[in-house]
Structure formats: C-alpha cells, structure tokens
Image (cartoon, rainbow, N blue to C red; front, side):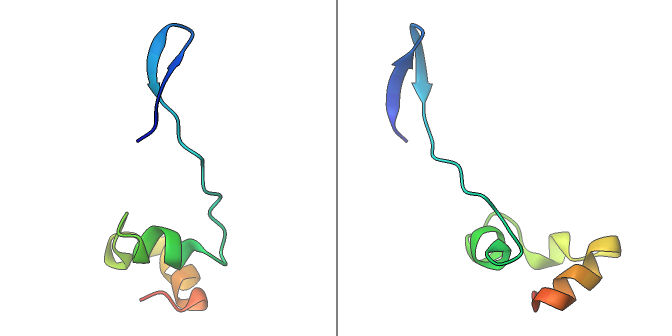
Length: 54
C-alpha cells in the first residue's frame, strides 16, 4: 500500500474502484473479496442470476 503523510498523520492512500453491474463479477467475485455464495442469496439472487453470477 502507498505510504504518505497527510496532515501530519501517516496514511495509506488508495485509488477507489467504482463497482457497477458491468464489472461487479470481475471486481468483487473474481477478485476474491466475496464469494457469490455469500452474496447471491435472498433478495440479491435474482440480480446475480440476471448478471450470470453463480
């Protein structure tokens, strides 16, 4: 992680990634942040199905 000092405080600065329906599979699931089985349940199952996330 990048190291910096911001307002005299040691900091780690990161560039955010905007997650959309077009990249959610790649960023969240393929990236290992969550497994589809952890998220694609209940009210989210139909959205995952629509995006081909299993």
